[in-house]
Length: 172
Length: 256
Image (cartoon, rainbow over all chains, first blue to last red; front, side, top):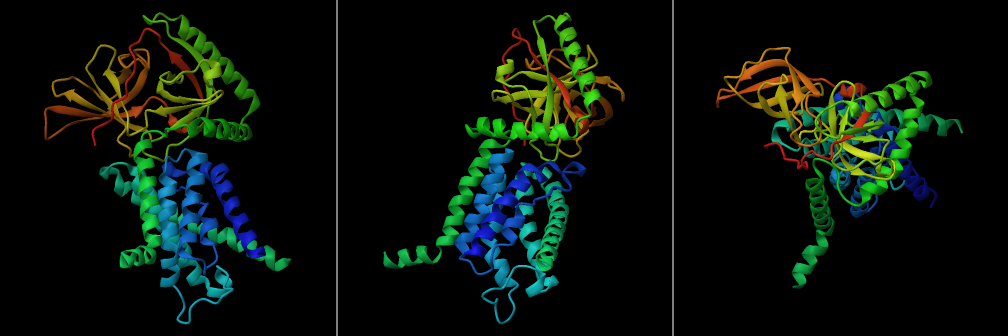
């Protein structure tokens, strides 16, 4: 129960942080666009039902769209990353599968797993978002470039924030 | 029938994904250019106040007051100038602007309570900025020149050749003027002005400066690369203009 509450709270805080803070921190003409709301999706527990990931991603995108005039772009991208999240987790699963209480992060599954898992979810989201946003074929290559650089920046941001929270939790 | 039901049950997540994705894409298609819908009023009200608070953080008090006075003075002077119409202006501040998207937009801290209406032109001391497309009580949303879905009417020099001004969507500072006949005499450094035909801007406001002129190999027209007169990265204080005698503005989409 505590875990569910914590996950829900993290989901809401990530949405608000993206809409109120990170949305304003777009730099280099959009080549670095933080998508911090994905923090709330990447850290969802590993063994939930696929439909829960889909709805969590879609609702997260809907929230960002409503608060930041996204016009459906974040909803569409959130549905794609939420829909693919169970597949990505299955693709990266250890041979014996995930433990029932496996926490998403480097402490239980290793840094390589954590970095790959985070980057794949973020890059899927970013590619769909920027490709749709381009609006015309001629601008799609630029959009894909922006997706790549923004995915790298967002992944780094998520990893840094997660590491900071892990250290604080250990101290307590 | 039973098999069909089982097939649907087995793939219910994928089917739900398809349905929701189609709904989201419909929303994207309908709102490309600028967000539309009843929720805009709600969102403008809530995010406008927050954006203004964020702007407060970056505000340098003395400069702010000096700029506000200058904007008010500019607005008054512009209203007095003879432009062949009864254009009048109100000062405002851009509290949020996107420049990373192809369909960019901005928000100003003036709304219908300040007599701002849909279709009003937005200008800065440097030149043409964009037009208002949505209004709430104290905030309004506008579309800038740097929006790939729009096109504007421009003229090279005050009596020169006219053409369509668009934003190709690559660099924020670079615009483009199209449909210029090959016979037109255009030199690098020439200024492109508004024509006043769309009813958004008064005529003769600077839009940009010619950077490069190229001949289209496929037709008889020139393409003129521009640098916008307005530095959108630093845009903050604006005026909102309305000319009641100008013809109604109807946006036209740039060719895909």
